[in-house]
Length: 246
Image: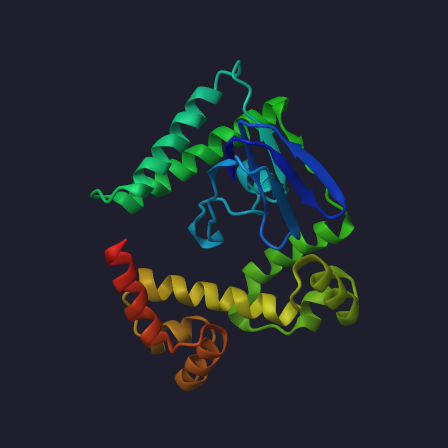
């Protein structure tokens, strides 16, 4: 999230953090959070799929480790990188609003550059890492485990054992942090990856289902319909039409 005007608060757990523009807020997946904004708030909100990041939250790279924690990064006008990151975000917004050739590739490049520049500013000591409690750390670990194992359809008890907690305790943690159950988080990851492959690969519905651990194509279609209200085939056709019109 890029805040370029107005003011507000970032809410993580029971702690509030004042937002003073210009600033960038990065939030890892699975973290319970909220915001309060003034009426004159201005900026950009960007939601990224983990699968679209070269270094997703929790991987062993410097950027992946940085993305695994929430950060509020003020953009100090005197910092050498501030002008570059603000220019990159302005170009990103302009690219999003206009339909030019290579739009998707340009957006991906601007997002990647903005994240790199913001992480650089943060590592140089100008950012505030928003404190995470033990449950938030467990959620980060759970997200990483789900990323590694979601295709094998491991039960919630497997993840609880890996995290060293009981299944009941894991359910309480996940509900308090996300409002969902562990099973719903795992299913959500499967649906997210199914959508990505339906849009960005040429595989058949049956092939995509098989790659995601569904031996029965009919069960894959029922699973996808349960969480989206549409069959994979219908969703794919509608999404491609939407993207062509965007």
